[in-house]
Length: 182
Image (tube, rainbow, N blue to C red; front, side, top):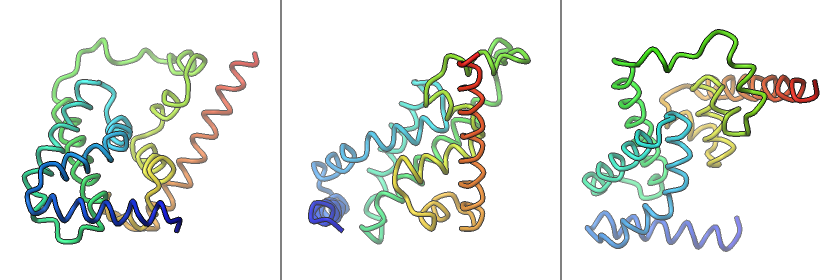
């Protein structure tokens, strides 16, 4: 572990301890340190900017109200991420109840869409169960054991989905490359 990582970890732990005692500035600093990560995770679940903003806002509010109950300061990031994932799932459930017909793509549109997409668009074509694990593992640096705790699943399930997600991403990437070359 590098010195800067150790300092950041100690700083994070100190901020969490202060926030648990009611220090609003410490809480704001914690949120500032995690905003980009929260956005990426919410983006892996949700496509609408409004829904992403709602999920992040709801997460921050819940964290602020309940941080005093966080027992281990070392798990702040995992705890925050779990709350965010739950908020995203709540929004997905709410949105599934009503969806305009115009949002459903016509059969065969995926290949046209792939010919013009970038990395994020490729990620969004993956099933949520693969996209989330790939993002948490590669984008956010969580370990397999941490992802398993976050998503309430077995480590072997995480490993399997990570492997399948890599393969599916590679297949989509290869298909896109083939379309661009033709």
